[in-house]
Amino acid sequence: MSPRTVNRRDFLITGGTAAAAAALALRSPAFARKLQRKKSRVVLVRHAEATDRLNRTDGEVLAGMLDEAMAALFNAQDAATAWSGIIRPDDAVGIKTNVWSYLRTPTELEDIVRARLRGAGVDDKRISVDDRGVHDNAAFRSATALINMRPMRTHHWSGLGTLIKNYIMFIDRPSDWHGDSCADLAAIWKQQRLAERTRLNVLVMLTPLFHGSGAHHFNPEYVWRYNGLILGTDPVAVDAVGARIIEAKRRAFFGEERPINPPPKHIDLAQTRHGLGVADPARIDLVTLGWKKDMLIEKL
Amino acid sequence: MTIPVLCILLTMQLPQDRAIISENPSFTFPDEIAGWRIDDRGRWTPETLYRYINGGAELFLSHGFEAAASRRYAREDQPEITVDIFRMQRPQDAFAVYSLSREREDGGFGQGAQVGAGLLLFWKHRYFVSILASPQTPESREAVREIARRIDAAVPETGPLPDVVSMLPPEGRRSGSVRFFRHHAWQNVYGFISTENLLGIGDDVPAAAARYDLDGDAATLLLIACPDQAKAKAGFRGWCAHYGAEARGDETHGAFASVRREDRWYAACHLEKFIVLVHDAPSESDAQALVERAVAAIE
Image (tube, rainbow over all chains, first blue to last red):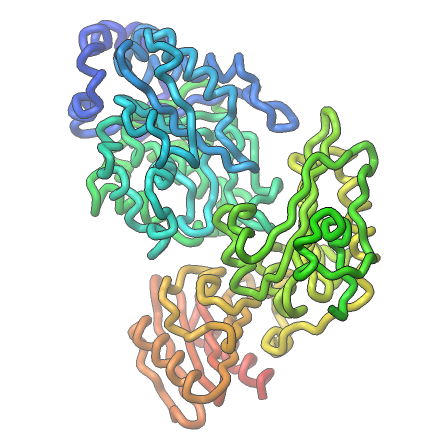
């Protein structure tokens, strides 16, 4: 399948009407997935100036990227319509972030999402942001909607730190899931109704880590300013796209095949063993927006 | 303690750590260096290290980790600099974590160093040192080197390489590719073998791995040193069973097996107390030749 490069205008022309009709139904992620019966839509958006030379995030640019991607993902006229399509004003929303000190979910992104949720009518008091405390966080246990967002990076035990893996902190003993390269992480999503409560997944690809080394598994030599976000309702499909980009970057950087080690098998198994979503490239509808230079993913 | 240790400032501030931190005052973290000032301090024990190194503490804990001290330095409009000094039980432990943390050998500090854009790693005697500034700026580059020089100078001793590392044949070996480990999790360092410990690698069964150039191609050599022949035989049999390879030769005096997988060749040999593995070779003859070189180096 070739990637479709779709601009905002294309979406306004082709998708706006359908989005308006489907907006209310999209509030159910199950319904959203039914709409994507054959393919999971994944939106990759990039901007050359999303980060600066110190890898700091430009919040204004990031907000524009997110808005554009939201409209594209949900075939909506604009981002506000897209948000209103997936979040109700009476939702209690938990934003599952990631605070790993060397590559955390940008606080700017947390703030933007919080603002968009408020724009969709959610009272700020009903919005919670947490990472390592979600297991014991009552706001997350009672949340009616979850937004899952984290940066992609290589990882000691799972090969890649993914959106699928980001929910491991909902578990009492995360280390219990490290066996066999974290093969069954997707099973976590069946607990606490995590899968059905998740309305949006955002894989942060602003400065991904494509190879782990050093005392903290973090070496600035293996981070690059890709300046992207990948969005989808299907976390498996989003992770699969992100993994392709990481693999391509490793190939380009090392000049030879350097498979991710350990292999991030939990992504494929999330489809084949756990039915959480689709990792099969033939079943992913990739939409690319914005900056195209060194995109590293010409086709799926 | 017989070794000058680097964490005295930490010791002075946190007297409860005296039991694990040497009192030799050979090094103190500077309060300020090139405009960076200390912003945070930490000290870590085997019980607390996992809080500091999320997901990666096992590398240290499985290789004789004793204690660590860390400092974070901050300067306006510059990246933070994080300095970590890990004290291990033995020099071979320090080399293990260094070898599994670096990608190449640049030299210049300690007994081996990788000096990258934003990360400087080196090992010396029982110490593994990591200095991180991400992303690198011209100013942080100089500050990182200055800190490394000071720590390097504070450790007068050097330590020997592990025996099994010294047995790796030098010809064709890629610089900076040598890895040493005593936990099976790192058997996959140059390509996935298994999540199981089929070779018996452990505290008393150390292993070394390296990449070798082969006429425009490359292969991986793994050398495992067992305490006795029985363990070597068991590991060899485990490998044969895992790869579906049939052993040839005499199990008492040495046996060989090879198998082809996806156009690449994998070979194993056990000789007395050693297991020799060649993985990902372009041909069976290449795999066998590299095994023979390793056997010759052992003998």
